[in-house]
Length: 167
Image 1 (tube, one colour):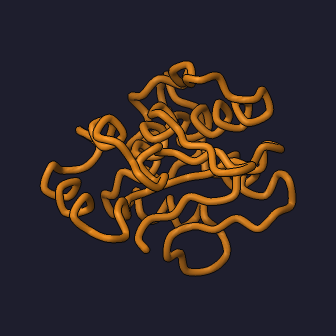
Image 2 (tube, helix red, strand yellow):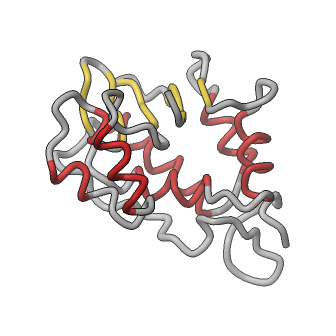
């Protein structure tokens, strides 16, 4: 099946996307996240690994807040991600990998990856190795804006607020 198929992973006819081979169980966050934030993180990872765009769409609007996504035509981030996956971009795989990296806390917001915070340290950048080509990471480190890759955020009340890339 193609990357746009919705459904669980495993077995005949399972959905395939860039996250299919990844673990549906995220690594424990350090320090631990508040339960409601960790719950949303776990549900995003599980839906992405299952290539379940319908569940991802529900999660983006679960709390009724506006969800921001990268350069997507229309108002449906899941449809945009499905199309990006069909075109060969590993959106869901990258999202799962990001949610397994260290996070940063900015007020009431939990953001992945931690490199988005002001004054990011060498270990924040090192965590991105393998997610982006080394030359891309080096370029971002030189930019005044810093990291411009995919980043995602969940509010302290468990609302998934964004998954954006670029400036």
